[in-house]
Length: 367
Image 1 (cartoon, one colour):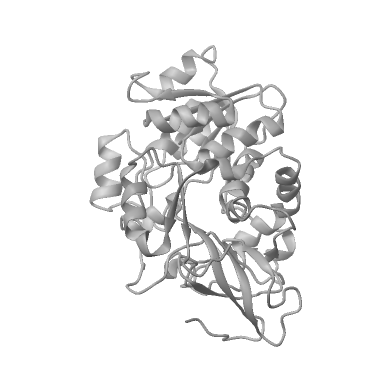
Image 2 (cartoon, helix red, strand yellow):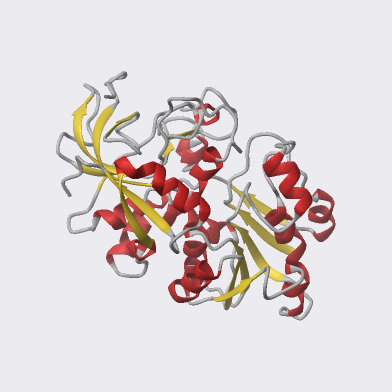
């Protein structure tokens, strides 16, 4: 049972939590310093049951969504809206800020795949769920929706642009959906799982292609369908466990010589047009990767990458959900009791039962 450790802490009784593709990087051993006994889970909602003496923004009984960023709200970077790069919440790194349930490289905070969770900086992160909002929508506002939205935002999409998204997981699907909000003229998503591609095509109204069945080389394929110019913008929503290249898989996923397989990032850099933008939200570890930086230089590319700053985006995204512009809960395919979380991880990791997004229901949820 978590306890108040700081005057700005809150304790929440978890009502919803999710298994994320990023959790699989921990599950499969791609992120270092993931310690035995740590509670995973960076996407969760909960009812406040206790607050520290300095907490003024939430009160006992509030049902809140908790952004995956642990952010102080007062440092140089938080004041710029870069809540994913908080300078105070993660003493283990000078890059990423704190993240719930994401190894000691991200601060060592226990996460929300539990019945109760401690939420630091409770005057900053936890946001009261608007009256009438479905908790299933709210829990996806803690990561999936803002990460997909920021992926499209960072891509610098101009009206009529062709955008390619690598990865048809929940974030990639949401990114493809959000590309239209920024004026894209054509959105293409690439993956190797037919059930995910079919889901993406229906949810995001985009073109969907299987890189194992529909093409020999994704880079050549994209060049051919863009008059040999390349896509205007490319989003890497895959990260460290990308398939498609034997050398990358062996060095990055099996031997861990580099911080995961960078196959999708190679494809992104090589298939975007000269002067184009590569937006990276797929997670890579904090050590070295084999990346074709010479191609970035010689093509004049802009690379934008970050953990999503959830708090900055929440007002706009809550409005989009309430107005029916984005329908987050449609991504949810499986609802799993918390006590069956191990089965949930196995199903999600092995891509069984057409699983797109699983959420965990705590036995104490009552909602």
